[in-house]
Length: 97
View 1 (cartoon, rainbow, N blue to C red):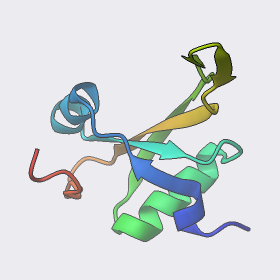
View 2: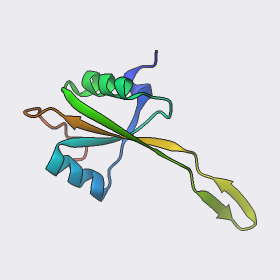
View 3: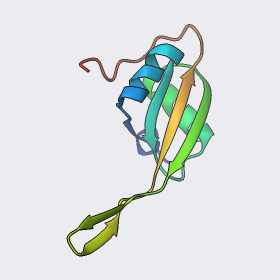
């Protein structure tokens, strides 16, 4: 079994991610590609000490990148939207934005 820090890679700090955090009490993370919704839920609950209501995931295909005549691809990745139960305190991982 993977540890919680191997499942949750990093928070996605974008304008949309911060907007969802404020209005819908939802956290957005980049997670391991093979992580399930249950693993993501347990990882967030253990790291941030909050209760999770639901988890939605989305898989993203890496884009093609070019450097002159050489081409390559960015890696594929997975994003998770984690909705907290009502009454839970929102963890602050992006305070200075």
